[in-house]
Image 1 (cartoon, one colour):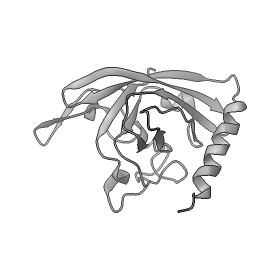
Image 2 (cartoon, helix red, strand yellow):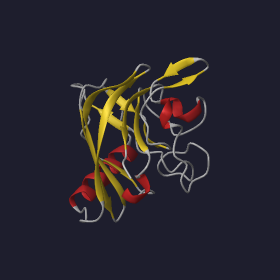
Image 3 (cartoon, one colour):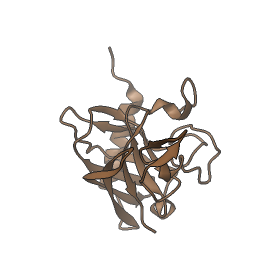
Length: 178
């Protein structure tokens, strides 16, 4: 089985950008585990910096299940549970994916859909996420007043065959202060 060249190229671009980050706007977002009963323990931080190519997200997270995870900016600055169909759902108070200047479709970080669609986050076999991802349509100033969400499972950046990329439940969340 061969390695796809597109993810490798994107990773190389993100690394190159990380070396050329300007001293412009930046922030640090604390992420905590979330469940239907509320916000839990801290799992680390994600540092975000503006670059000439978009926002660079540098995760320093641990205690996660290995593999790819859907990664998004959500519309509300609240990581608490909320009810759906009479049952509490983890971090549902964050609302849906932040649409921003995009269209109300899930198309990934390079499409014209939700502006909050970020590149998927890779978690290694030790449960750590440390690989930076680049979101070309986002600036740090856009993020303030929203939340940063990590989903269990990957993201195919489409609403088919499953809505919102099939990323599954919300496992970690961080409020982005104004």
